[in-house]
Amino acid sequence: MAYGGGFGGGNMQQLMKQAQQMQRKLQEAQQQIAETEVTGKAAGGLVEVTMMANKQPVAVTIKPEAVDPDDIEMLEDMVLAALNDAVKQADAEPDCFDMKYIEPLARLIAELSKLPSVGEKTAARYAYAILNGPEEDAKALIDAIKDVRENVHFCRICGNYSEGEICHICEERKSDVICVVKEPKDIVALEKVKDFKGVYHVLGGVISPLEHVGPNDLRISELLARLDGVREVILATNPDVEGEATALYLARLIKPLGIKCTRIARGLPEGSVIEYADESTLSRALSSRVEL
Image (cartoon, rainbow, N blue to C red; front, side, top):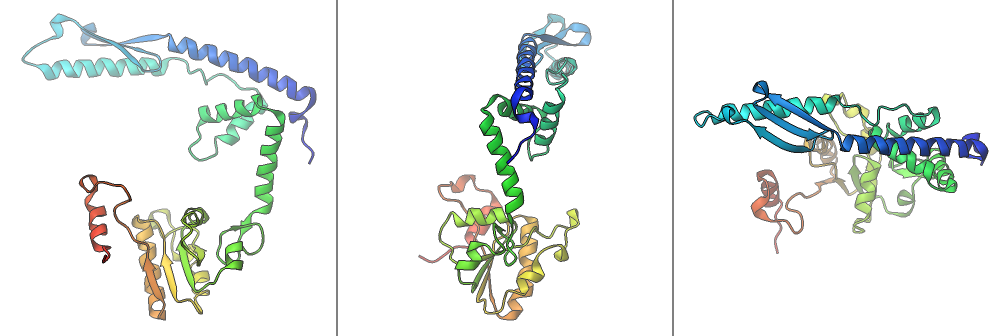
């Protein structure tokens, strides 16, 4: 596989050098911020709150004339006002991440920031790790991303991830019991248990009016087309509002066909304490009780 000049030769060395210089500047800026103090004031300076620029409180100073034993609430309000003023000043301090990135690094950070739960600062740390790590690791990452995008598809039967037209579960197992899940990653979790020997069906989501997702947006028709010869359908959508609504909708479609339709059990997790369980969980645990 061929790679662009950005990962080889003098261009790579120059990019590494620029990134290391920027990283040193970043560390210096972080140190400067750590040593910067800001002070918020209230009531004309009767109450002062001092904190570091990273919003770590350092001290609270209250002048005697600010203290009125008969009006403690007023003092509390002044302390809160001074704290808020200090926070505003800390926010006004220059952010060490406001500096300009070189173009290739900025592009990498922007792409990494598109990943779930990855902000600019986290993306920048990932980008520096890629740059400062071995070149073969960067190439391996490129290969892995390219491989998964080109070779992983959806199984045409169940909707699970597969390298071929049909996944290994659909090819190897009996299809008389189908477990219905929201997403392919749910199959990974269920397979870790190693107790289920049937096949799966991925809906590709759940019914959610707020997100404008209805039954026609899910793989429900494909599920109904698979029910010939099936003796049980297990509904394993998440136990939240959307998951419950989807399970109820599917049950109303499947049960009239004379097929057993079950819902995964819910209740107290292993090792939990009844005292700290919420009412909904306890109610589910009681209704799903089993005979010993």
